[in-house]
Length: 152
Image 1: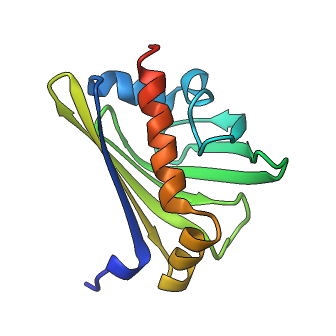
Image 2: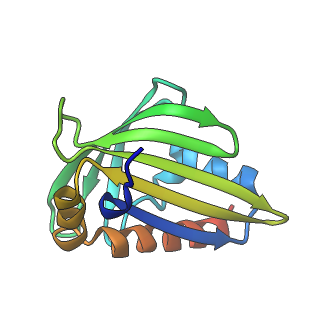
């Protein structure tokens, strides 16, 4: 088995909310619409079926008006602990597609979220970090989730 260290991103955050509530915010379109994405971005959700084989299609709207089509195809759904999915730009054989594993670890009234993204190769990983600011964007997204959880 080869290492994925040079082609992965790992973002971890502990939020002050129980795992069931974090899961609800992450898997219900009525909630995720309020926080998903980096600062200044909004989304239009076309469909969201959080089941193995289910699809979440959405259009992410950038603050400059650029639209970014997204498709998530769920592989594993273990409520309220684990999501694994393939993320792409809603194109078949998207060369920039990547695998995501999100773990929700209950810690009393808090939840540790670990989001691991694995890209096809180092060059693709490096491109999303430098061109799209994926690390900062991921942290901003989790900041927005943390704030949104306070309203639930």
